[in-house]
Length: 204
Ligand SMILES: Cc1cc2nc3c(=O)[nH]c(=O)nc-3n(C[C@H](O)[C@H](O)[C@H](O)COP(=O)(O)O)c2cc1C
Image 1 (tube, rainbow, N blue to C red):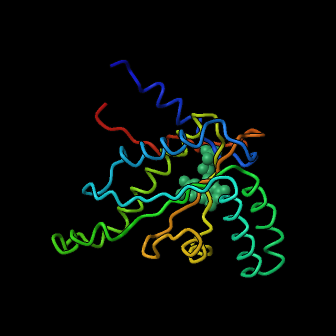
Image 2: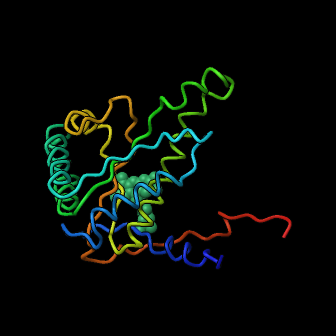
């Protein structure tokens, strides 16, 4: 097999937070579903528990989500905070094409809690690790397909209403919302902290 590392690295370099998004997609809905399915099938998870769950909302369903976020945020935070921090941002997310809701189902670890009680305290953290891996994979792949994405955390504020609206089991732990659409502007400037205080190699 040819060396895939340069292509994979190019994918990581191309993954950025993009906030200027249109209500259009660069790929078909079927291709979006295929990418999510492949991520589900190929991501690692602790003891191969496969607790990651995704719900993807497209077009009107996506708009409904951000209408709900607007409604809940406007009723939950002080008005000044809502105007400064929420109104325009939520309108920006709503203007995009879709959102992937990421969840983890803690029930997958139940049998292992009995089998391995000594490490059971680590299981919630491992669900988070697995979720992060899936989030990165979806984000990278959608952007490799020409879409722009940004990652949001309106949970837990919107969780109950989402469960009600899209029949999401209440037991699933909500992790994040990845907003995506056709990019209409570049990502923001990004600085990188020096690697000398972040990466350490011994035995070279
Ligand atoms: C764990 C995690 C949480 C994040 N939460 C948010 C968020 O709630 N809202 C947001 O706009 N961006 C969020 N981001 C995106 C980061 O702000 C962004 O990745 C970082 O500034 C680097 O920019 P880049 O994505 O363009 O490389 C999050 C990223 C990570 C990894």
